Structures are given as structure tokens and as C-alpha cells.
Image 1: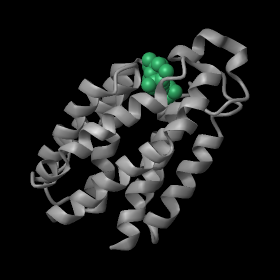
Image 2: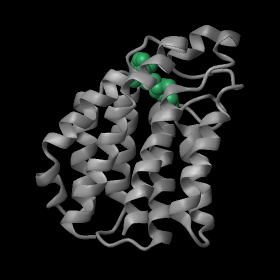
Image 3: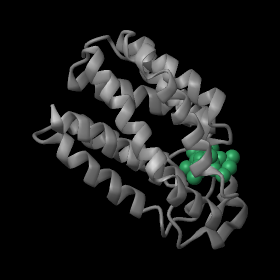
Image 4: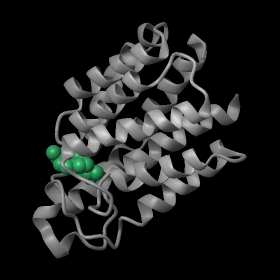
Length: 201
Ligand code: ADP
Ligand code: MG
């Protein structure tokens, strides 16, 4: 994976988050405290500011640097969790991973997020997108970069009828039902952004 490709991945993720900041904030206003869009925008602006330096690093180190920036800049519950995800990927990935190695690394990083968040599938969080995307990724097959965005979007939609069990939205209990989880939506946006760069390649 060359420097230009890593730079484009960072750019695509940051652009997607920044372009959808208001939507993420609106989702978080419905079932949280309305800061998810701003949190994510701040984090990815920080990543973008260091994009060239980060992209020059080998993939594992680049991911660790992204993770650190997200932990420091996003804040909220999602900052440490996205930071854990990126750092977990950085720990688990070789510099030039195969698809199978990348799927395995994502599985390990998701385990780190679960441990950090004391959370699991079905609780109306980012994990409800990350887990099905990892499963589809691990199952492999053709056209992964085309199929995974659809899997992510459907998984984010599937959080609408869920009742939140973790995070701020859980304070609402039954009233969290009927809204998409903001973290699920931001995860879906990130998956779409990453896949769009692989589709262009
Ligand atoms: P905060 O909830 O502190 O305001 P954000 O609004 O930035 O932080 O992020 C909220 C998102 O974080 C939720 O929509 C959810 O997807 C995710 N989240 C919160 N708590 C957890 C958890 N324990 N495990 C996994 N994801 C979580
Ligand atoms: Mg919030």
C-alpha cells in the first residue's frame, strides 16, 4: 500500500465525516447530546491536518497515529472507541495485508472495542455496523468494495428499531427506538469512504 493510496484513504474518510457532520449531529440530538457530528469532524480535521505525515508511515504505524489523534480529538464515548479500533487495527495488521489478514485484523480490533466499551452486537452502537461488515469481509468473495457499503448501510438502518443498551442513548430506554444510532451511521460512512477508494483503484 503506497503513500498516495493511504493519503487518499485518509482524505476520503475525513471528507465523508466532515460532509455529514450535521446529519450525525441531528442523529445524536434525537437520542444523545447532539455532539457526535462535531466530535467526529474535529477528530478527522486533526487527522487531515497530519495526513501527509501519517500517510508516509507504514500502514500499522499510520493506523496507530490515526487512533491516537482520534482518542485525543474526538472526545465523547466515540473518540476512545474509534481510537481503540484504529489502534487495534494498527497492532493486528501487517504492513501489506491480504484481504484475509485485513478481515482477521478487523475482527481483533472489534474485540478491543467491545472490551473497551463493555458492549456487543445488538446494543444499538457502532458495533452493529462494524460486526456485520467484518463478517461480510471475512466471507470474502467478489466485489467486496461494492458489497460492503451496502452491508454497512443496511446494518446502520437496522439500528433504527433497536433499543439502546450502551452509551448515552441507553438513558432513553424505549424512547431510543425509532432512531438510527449516530455511531452506526458514522461507521457506515467510514466503510463507504474506504470502499470508494478501493473501487477507484
Ligand atoms: P457521547 O455519547 O459521549 O456524546 P458521541 O456522541 O461522540 O459520544 O458518540 C456516540 C456513539 O458512540 C453512539 O452512537 C454509539 O454508536 C457509540 N457508543 C457509545 N457507547 C458505546 C459503547 N459502550 N460501545 C460501543 N459504542 C458506543
Ligand atoms: Mg454525543
